[in-house]
Length: 493
Image 1: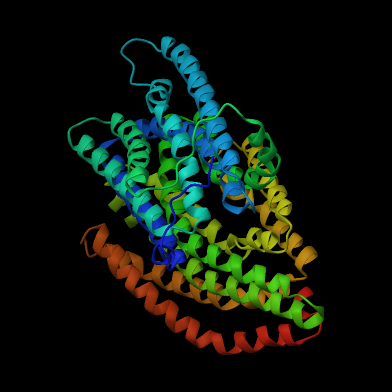
Image 2 (image 1 turned 135 degrees about the horizontal axis):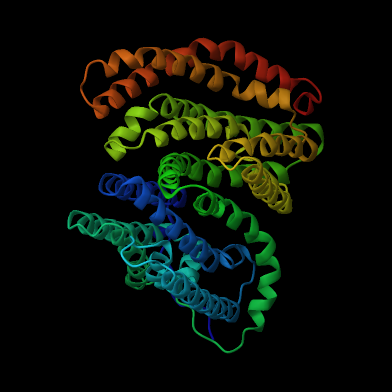
């Protein structure tokens, strides 16, 4: 079989990072709109059942979508036979997963008492076609990314989510309830297949020769495992909560997690993709003290820029969690507001370590990222066993963040003191801003103007206060950071 003939014009590859960021932003916005509509039309118990079902199906989808994704995108000299074998293998795995879902869901549904609400098993069963559809489109998506054809990919991804989101919203207005999310999941997967055909994405073929897939599987297992764990950690947490907590509490947890994670994904995705190329170039140029200093400076500068955006936004979200959740869910979500505060503050504290995985890849040590992901998973399981509470999601960071910072120091020579100097201004300015907005929040709420005006006024005030505090603090911090970088071995302190 010849190499796929579809070749994109250089204009289609222009500004791939911009199109990639627009893709992430559009997906997050549509997901947020659907989330808000679900929270307004479903109670916490129904939302919890839907969240557990969706988590199970999305874990299955992510496996068939992502297992061969990175190896197809990155492997030099990739052969069409290898793409075809990966495509066929993915479909076979998806078929096995759908069959297993059908058998398990059929048995669980048979145990449900008559007259009780639709259970998780039935929702999973009706969402399962999306697993096969996700496997069908996986190789087309990977090949577009390999070609850096981000524009057609962004159009297809965003278009599929818009169609699915619109279908789900209309279904909710018509009283479909939990079945609206079943429609959303299946329509998104089906429309992506059609839109990839419309943009003439490369297509893989079915094949009987699966040996090339086995050759790819070794690299894929190491390279994709970390991403699969990270992508599914929140989903797995929601599913685990479904076994130990009431459905109504799971619904509150799911709403809080989704609100915070959607914001984090928008903030982090673009920066991470840009940072990878810069860190890789700096790592390859390491020659003696000057090269090491360049790598340290690149990592610290990128981390500082990420924290300068991420920390104030998350602190502001934590402070304004109550009006935010009231606006999204329209009442009945008090626990979710409290959890948004905790989850957002935890993500803010984690921000100095977000680019560590990117740094490990740039240094040619991707397995370090896998060990961190495994430690993250193990610490979450441990916290859930010791304290089966939604706050286990926060407590796991007591293990993960120190481990990541230690690995960064050990393998890149970037010490904690240098990292603290890099992020001191964003953290200090965000804390001052958060304290001021928190003090003024009761006055805003006393106006009785509704949650949206409170969010708008609080957000504008927070942005202005943060800019003022950062401007006042930045002079001294800049001198401190350069002193760390100028001192021999300063980055390793």
